[in-house]
Length: 174
Image (tube, rainbow, N blue to C red; front, side, top):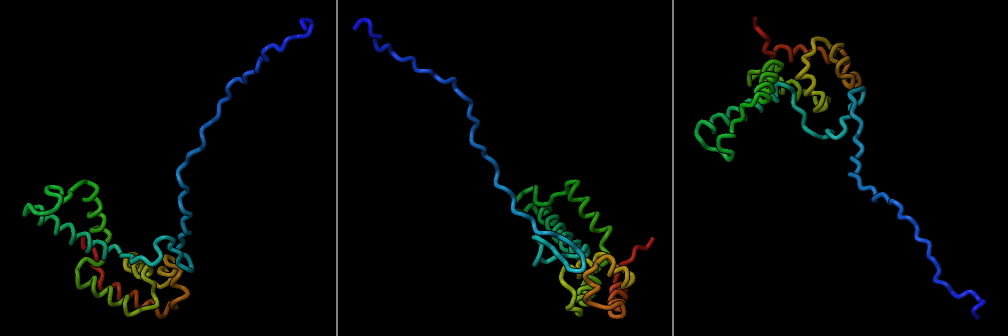
């Protein structure tokens, strides 16, 4: 039995450790955004169904809130204490932008603009906001800037609406 090889302990081959990369952890993919296009048909994407404002309407809202916060800050009231009225540079630039580009600054003119656009229910809310902000002189200009108007009104029907809107604009006097 000595001639027979003894069962020597088998050398177990140990494999060299291999590097395993950790499982990929990634952020969830963002939802596919809907296509936005202002063409012959308005595609507003995520903003579909939202209430848009013209620059003049936005100016009226922001100015009212800004003034109210100034008053509260002067009285010492407000949830945020001394931060109730924020006069940061970016806020002031935003207010200046609205002041510069708003075409209906007087409240009665802004109300009249809304009345003219309300009298034309064929305009969508987005088209109303664009007409109130762009202040087009001619029907051709309006249809070029807002292509969806072409299918809703002809030039002869649109021009009187634009003329009426122009009557209420607060023009710059220099």
